[in-house]
Amino acid sequence: MPKQFDIVVIGGGPGGYVAAIRAAQIGLATACVEQAAYADPKGEVRLGGTCLNVGCIPSKALLQSSELYDQAGHAFVMHGIGFESLRLDVRTMMQRKENIVAKLTAGIRALFRKNGVTLLTGHGRFAGRSDDRWQIEVGGHTVEATHVILATGSSARSLPGVDIDNTLVCDNVGALAFEAVPKRLGVIGAGVIGLELGSVWKRLGSEVTILEALPDFLGAADADIAREAWKVFTKRQGLEIVLGVRSIAVERGAATVTVRYEVDDQAFALEVDRLIVSVGRVPNSGGFDAEPLGLALDERGFIAVDEHCHTNLENVWAVGDVVRGPMLAHKGMEEGVMVAERIAGQASHVNYDAIPWVIYTQPEIAWVGRTEAALKKDGIEFRAGKIPFSANGRALGQGDTTGFVKVLAETGSDRVLGVHILGTNASELIAEAVVAMEFGAAAEDLARICHAHPTLSEAVHEAALAVDKRSLHF
Ligand code: FAD
Ligand code: NAD
Image 1 (spheres, protein in one colour):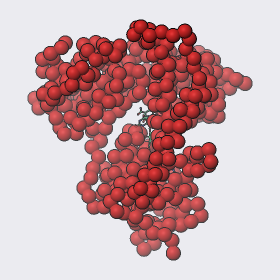
Image 2 (tube, protein in one colour):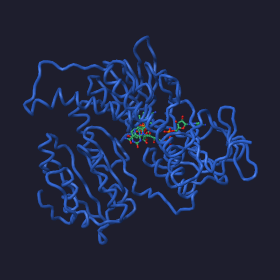
Image 3 (tube, helix red, strand yellow):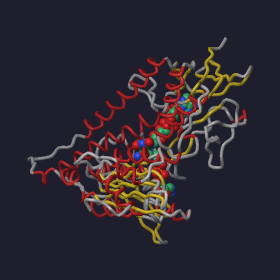
Image 4 (tube, protein in one colour):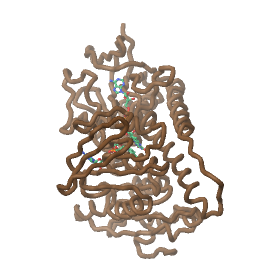
């Protein structure tokens, strides 16, 4: 008789492994299926999905290393710190990144053991349904589950006619594993990956050119932030970003790549030593034999779910990148918790209006809630308070005053509708804004909270005061 579980989760990325841990915590018999998409040097399957293996974690490790290199080369001098020569060892940098990935992925295995989650390694697929139970086949064995959670994630979107070899032409996997700094790096797509990984290699010495199809830069961010970030990235940091690019064609040479493209009907050619293609990601919504069962997809190919991540199939749920909403690890994790708890009969939900976004460039970009443009489009009246980091003592002390904090609050109710930050540590500062929005706080509430001095968080405080035109230090 097949082994029986209350829940089988297919996919061991942030959406899947968190769902599995939470379900097991509640006392549900839980298994998590992970194929060997990522394996350690001994060939053992690594949990953590895209995020831990070839996404969030390795990219942030390299962003930190490259930021330190950049600071040593350019910022130390203003502190009166100098040295004879600066050396870059890409092998060590990559090994450090690998060590972090190894530690964290092994940590999830340990969390599975601690919480009693059964790990089933192999490709998971639906094998049938009988007696109100789903049969799931994993590597030739069949297990049964009352509930199935699909957390199969996403893959890099490809461009027609552009083959990824992860040597000359790379997606995120290859772009995180260069063995040396390319002299000239091309990037297609000025989205999150393009900016983060473009920044890594620019700081380490590459000439970086990013080709973006859209005519506007960072369209999802608040226009003020996008404008300022554009100035910093292109003018101060020297990233070459070309907007409105059309008709991209890629020709591969022995050791170089030529990208042909058009802007305003004018033809250009860019020769580079490495090319990163980062034009978005597509959901892994097929490949597990759910089609014959009638699993519904939405018009964009994501698994169709309701607001609680339930699919059209009984007791089949889906979370993370494979369903609608931002492709962010923390969004997938929240959905995983919600689904595990709902299966256990709890009334959990995800507040999709309070999911923060962070782009880990330097300065960092972080926001939660609505942009000015979105509020204007919906005819919502608001007041804005904006404070530059140049008016913040801690930012001055740290030697980086780039950027600002902007708080948007509804006229009348004063409820915080959006907070937008460009600056050092914006990724950490945004947490306060998320709390404010989650609890429906007013700008006045943020303005009345005592913030430690001197901290960057005082800029959030001052921006909240500025909503009412009573900032104290600007
Ligand atoms: P995934 O992480 O993709 O995991 C899905 C897992 O399912 C995989 O391990 C796969 O092997 C497994 N699987 C698929 N099908 C099957 C099957 N049939 N059987 C068994 N196993 C299967 N997000 C952030 O929030 N912050 C960041 O800083 C950030 N940085 C990123 C940087 C890069 C370069 C990239 C590419 C992404 C980044 N993301 C970031 C996005 C983040 O990685 C994803 O949102 C997140 O990993 C999605 O989690 P998931 O569990 O839905 O899917
Ligand atoms: P993205 O959607 O952020 O950016 C893709 C960019 O490519 C867009 O600006 C798009 O207009 C452009 N583009 C699309 N087709 C093009 C073409 N033919 N030519 C030129 N440009 C083209 O996607 P991404 O950067 O690939 O990242 C994928 C996802 O991974 C992100 O959406 C995000 O959800 C996640 N991610 C998050 C983080 C983070 O949270 N810090 C970091 C990296 C990735």
